[in-house]
Length: 369
Image 1 (cartoon, rainbow, N blue to C red):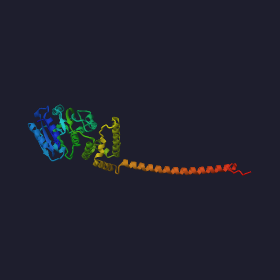
Image 2 (image 1 turned 180 degrees about the vertical axis):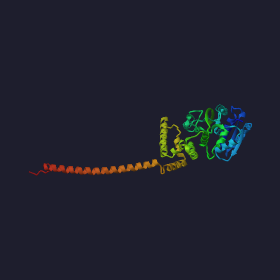
Image 3 (image 1 turned 60 degrees about the horizontal axis):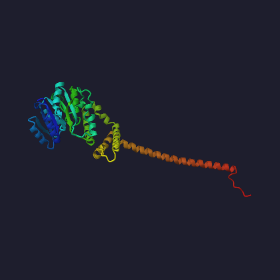
Image 4 (image 1 turned 60 degrees about the vertical axis):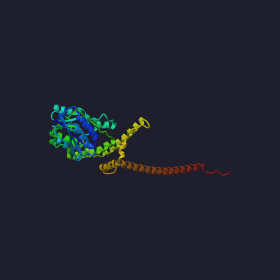
């Protein structure tokens, strides 16, 4: 057995069915690989789906189950039970290209004892929204940032399409099971592997198709989870705080940028609606920010925590209103003072003029002759 494909899964039975079907129809010889599926406490019909796929696999697919402990623990269990010298990690929402395993095996033959990162892209069946295209352009998967495919940074160690020798996993102790969610646990593994000297290479020919459409609303929830996982990463490896963005997230500018970007985006949505014409249906993803009262409440709590007080923008508006009111009062006082001065000046001029007229005899009444 050359390579074991480890697939953690949780409550995605229909997608898992398609993923396993794709893994069983690979171009690599059937005897060169096995599939190890680890059910991470699913409550749907995942066990039945795995059993159905196993009947078609002719001994190439094995089923493991654990209580819900997260994908890191599930992968570690799969590695412990795997028989292959090489381990290929992928996800239950990643439909494999037919040549996926063949390309990973080829990369290991050509590059030696390395870790191999394959390419991940949206599945062609999906309608890729502008937001999903934005995520693919370096946010969720940063393949375009790779400068040297023969020496890739650990920041690109994505467990949705990653293969390496089980010897390396045993050397670093596998995935850190303190990470309970699919966020940063693979990058953290890549960091420890990098410290021990493993070189990562990128093979774009080894493709998995991510079948997990998302929206801004759902991704914001994911980002909150990612933030908590980043804090865990930081506690374990304080030296990477700057690259993780920990320091930046704690600065007041982060909150102000949120408001600026949100306003800019809402303005752009309005411009787009105006250009498309009246009545055109346009998805306003910014509205997702206000649908969940819990999210809005947590956002206010975050602002209070970061700034040590209430919303700084609101406070700035309160101060501006107070200053404006003071200016109005000053203006009223000035106008009142100015009016009194003008009256006194006018009165003095009038009296002086009257005295001049009387001196000239123009102001006296003529007596009857």
